[in-house]
Image (cartoon, rainbow, N blue to C red; front, top):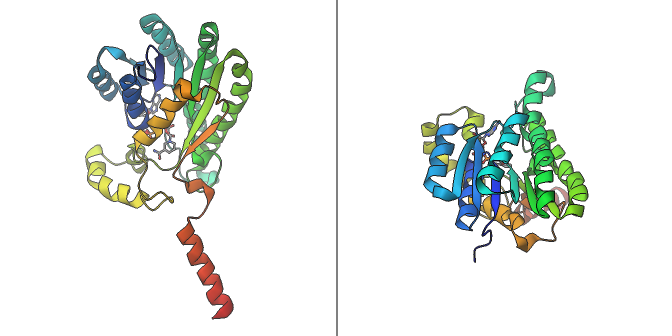
Length: 276
Ligand SMILES: NC(=O)c1ccc[n+]([C@@H]2O[C@H](COP(=O)([O-])OP(=O)(O)OC[C@H]3O[C@@H](n4cnc5c(N)ncnc54)[C@H](O)[C@@H]3O)[C@@H](O)[C@H]2O)c1
């Protein structure tokens, strides 16, 4: 028996990257998946590739009505909702605070934090009525440490982590678990969009970027979308049945601080200063 047999999931931002890898893995593990995104071409094609287990819906997560309609579609076409993965997101404006337009800040918060709130708001009653559920919010190491992103993105992700904890304490009482995942750097199209590159130009530089990310954390390889999808699969399924309110950090150890070899070299430099 597959790990998500008979389950129904809604995944936002499912046309690409982590969301797409999660949709593919969830279907492989027996779930039916509603794939929500604003990239209708890629999302539609991906859902068609996955067959009858998947359906694509256009849903802009900055719009309350779109999120609600996507959840309603899961109930209407697939018979209920067991898992919501609020995953859609992207970088904000990378600039000093004085140069960030307020509207840009609002947009990032709406796409990341407000969308997670709306998802929980409408998924909770559906899951409570079923007597179980798993809500997975996509956070980031940028949500609890500085230096990994722009200001707006970081504070929106910090909000997602605390929203997760708050909601977990309420909904846990109804056997609805709420957790989040904090990836470090993952090789996805997010960097293509942030850099304003074409897909083609980005594809050419992908091997170099992947190699570059190898040195970002103690584990000596880059993080791939499948690494995060497998964490989401675990949170969606019964194996994590007693995990609630957690921030599952999937970053190869990056957010713990310096890797051992960096530490050794720092200590060596201190030794040189002291002893010559
Ligand atoms: N890639 C990383 O290094 C990384 C690290 C930490 C956290 N994350 C988080 O993981 C999540 C997925 O990112 P990714 O790296 O897979 O990015 P991605 O760009 O590959 O995929 C994001 C998807 O979200 C969709 N999307 C964007 N805005 C949307 C909206 N308003 N409504 C609906 N869909 C929308 C895009 O069309 C795209 O399909 C994001 O929340 C991101 O912040 C990514």
